[in-house]
Amino acid sequence: DIHMTQSPSSLSASVGDRVTITCRASQSISTYLHWYQQKVGKAPKLLIFGSSTLQSGAPSRFSGSGSGTDFTLTISSLQPEDFATYYCQQSFSRPYTFGQGTRLEAK
Amino acid sequence: QVQLQESGPGQVKPSGTLSLTCTVSGDSISSSYWWSWVRQPPGKGLEWIGEIYHIGTTNYNPSLQSRVTISVDKSQNQFSLKLDSVTAADTAVYFCARGAQAIVGISDLWGQGTLVTVSA
Image (cartoon, rainbow over all chains, first blue to last red; front, side):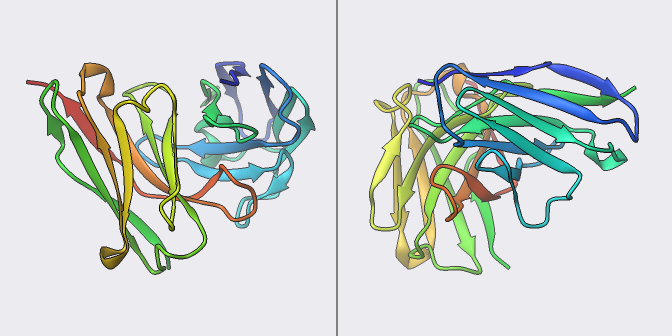
């Protein structure tokens, strides 16, 4: 299985901050890396797929980059509705695997 | 508007079988999508369980493969999950999801999730 590691595991930030979350794969996954946002008690919501393509309806303040083993999710200016947990996921090979999550909290 | 809704017992006894159904509304389950199950133990991360294509092709997580079956019922526009020989470690919120057509392996539409507790 491909192991996905996110850092940090938790993060405190303020509205308006620029936030970056990192995801590392245990082997190269090209750009088969995707990001989800999950709010408490809700299903995950796809934000970015293929490392950098913004899902329809996702705000443009979200962006993604990377290829191979190292990837980042950036929120350019944090909004109140962005406090949530973020997961990366690889679909390079089955079983599809997720990172452990990054919890983004208000400072 | 396409929606997915999980249903099934909220509690299963240890060594029993967990059975859940996902009803798809607003689209045909015979459309060219992969339909998936993902679970999340309380307070923990996401685990991919497996997927099925409308023609019946399945892929399972090897960690669960010996215990899991995913099937499609086209007449009811549903797909289902069965997990045998459950233990407390199978207690989780179970989500059904639709695979995105852009890239295999990602889910762009999810059900709300249903909590299944394994307990006597």
